Amino acid sequence: MSRFGLLLLIISGLMANASDVFDHEIKGYPSNLRNCDPVANELAQKFLDAAKVEIYWAKGSKISETECNIKLSYIANERLNLPATVDRDSLSAVEWKGLYPTYADCEKSLEVEKTLFVQETGLSPWISYCGVQRSYTGKTSYYPVIEAVGKPIKQFFGSGSTVGGTPLIGWEQALKEIKQGAEARGIAVASVSGFSVGVAFEVRMRFYTKERNWLINEKFGKFTEPSACESQVDYIKSTFSKVQVPPIAALCAKDYEGFTLNIVNLTPDIIKSKPLWERVDPKTYTSLTDCLSQIGETEKVYTEKFNKKVMVGFCFNSSPDTFQVMLLEDSFRP
Image (cartoon, rainbow, N blue to C red; front, side):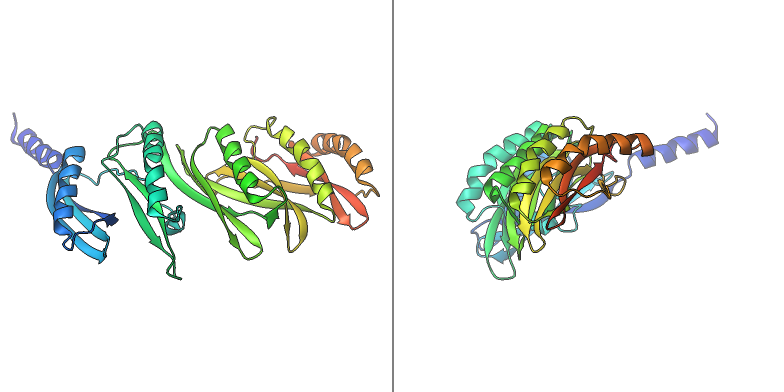
């Protein structure tokens, strides 16, 4: 072998054995001990068994009477993939945490969450516990933390969106429909929750998918009477099965604008995707019945003239006494 070949072999060997030191933090781990270092050592051993890497050091710091922050430092060729039920890629990850009002409520859900985690990621957790979320007002709530080592089949994400004001069917039923709609799309939902934001309502969903998805809501049309809005929801829902990427829910809600139709969607990669485009037909009708009778023809003319696919058409109040047809263009289909 030439000196040049020998040199390449040595360099290749050095590169193959190259390693670095990486840190990993476990926040808010429950412990009543006054010193967190024994907890850090215990978790370091669990991490070593799961990740098969050398632990460089482990350190714990007390952050409350019942919590420790643990820092582990490990040696590896590259940073490990550590999928968890904390959306680390979300700018508002902290907002997805406070799910349960008590620690006991969180503990009850932990086994169910672990089962779903294993099912969707294909990985066995090396750690699981209930973390504490404290709001700026001092209110505490709890959230499940489950973490594994390896490349997951699906990843955990959290996303939320403001949905109108108050759904006419009530929030318990609205959240149920959003969850069912997402599951019909093949989304594994860990939880759907909500809270009031002034006159609006924020929906938060925690779920598993292969790629980043975002929960979004768009409001369409205005209605002077709630019955006019509600009468069209079933028809709109029936069209969802006809499109390639169906929305997950259609809801009528009351907010500061009156009554509006809200379409809740789960959009793959919000940066690359398009929203639902609305097109309003200029013709007006003096009754809801007359307007509804013209939706089919309006969709046909629009499709033929502009070569655009329509997801659904419906009627809204263009004034207190008149109606117009609104078409929602199915921009998710080529």
